[in-house]
Each structure stands twice: as structure tokens, then as C-alpha cells.
Amino acid sequence: MLGSGSAGNSILVCSTRSKLLIDAGLATKEIEGRLEQVGVDPLELNGILISHEHSDHIRSAGVLSRRYNIPLYFNAATYVATQGKIGKLKQVEIFESNHGFKLQDLLIEPFSILHDAADPVGFCFYLKDRKLGIATDLGKPTSLVRQMLKQSHALILESNHDPEMLLSGPYPWWLKQRIRGKFGHLSNEDSQSLLRDLLHQDLKNIVLAHLSEKNNHAELARQTATQVLQERDDVIADLSIAGQHQVGDMIEI
Image: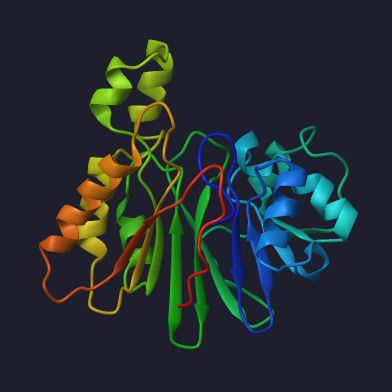
């Protein structure tokens, strides 16, 4: 996790033959610096996958693509929605939501999620018998989301806000309604409910992501998720919290 939260999001996914970014919502210098921390040259990147067009997910996508000759991967609606936001692009690849595609040695399945964007997606990545599931920026965990994330060996899952903190916090009412609505963001409790459905013996890593700095605390999110893990004696998984201002540990699946 290069960074996760309302100020910017980016995830580095590596395999034997591939190095990819999922979103590029941090400032360009931040992404360059954080890649350097983990020993990755931007010139090594095979692509940047865009989940949706909000600025905290695309802020530096255009600059990175042009500077390092990196292809950008969108679905068609998201590509159209980014026009005028990330500049002229030379390398664009269009994928279809809910249709898998190959990139180097990875099979990638983008799946539709509920969020207030043109055609937002989560992603599943497959390599041999390993699976990584990523779902952030979703207001409601649909049946499709549950189906796609099942049997993941590692999960990156939104745990955005504590409902009481959100309602008593400083945001205007319209923004509170947006965040807590079905096209907004998952609360700690919603994330807990989804996680309960996804637990299985081979799930070894769980990362809670996109925590609000104003409407959540890392320990609240951790405690809520830990309650689910304590319900299952047969599941032993490492639980971590993605930070906004620091790079997370590399997780090997």
C-alpha cells in the first residue's frame, strides 16, 4: 500500500513478470518517492489500473503515464469521465467491467461496485493458485462483490468511517449523507459484515483501507475487524491498516 485515504490512493502489485499500480491518486513526487522506498523504478511499471475517476485515485496518473511511458487501463466510461482531468494520453488500454483480461503473467478481473462514479470497479488478481481481492470506495457490498472476493488469499478492503464519528463530525449534512449512502463508502461495521462472509482458512492477509482521517480511528477499524476474526478459530490472518502518509509493508501472497 503506497497510500490510502481521502487525500490519495495507490497500491503496488508485483509478480514475477509484472509491476502495476492500482490507481495513482497521490501527488507525482509522493508516488515516485514511495516507489523508491520499496525499490521500484517507475520505468519498471507495466501499467496503471484506474478504478474510477475521482481525483484521489487519478491525481498523478496522466503525469506518470507520460513521464515513464506507462499504459493506463480504464473501462470506457471511466476513461470518458477522466477527460480534461489528466491531460493528453498516449497509451490507453480499455477493459470491460466484469470481463477478465491478461496482463503479463496476471489474470485481472475488474468487477462493478456501487460508488458515485461513472463505472467504478474493484479488482481481483490471479497468479497460478493465488488470488488478491481489492474493494475500496464502495457504498454497499453487493452480491457480485461478495462473489468476486470469495476465496481470496489476501484482501484489501475498505473500512472508511465510524458511523457515530461521521454523524457528529464537522462535515456538512449532504456530505455525511453521501458517505453513508449506498454509493458512498463502507463503514467499519459494513466492512466487518462483508469480511465475515469472506473469511476462509486460506485467507492469510487482510488490509483495511481508505480510512477517513476525520471520521475514523485506526484502532476502531482494527477492533471491529478483529471481532470477526475472533469468531473463527480456523482462520489465522494478519490484519493491518493502510496509512495515508506512509508506505505499508510488502505482503507476499
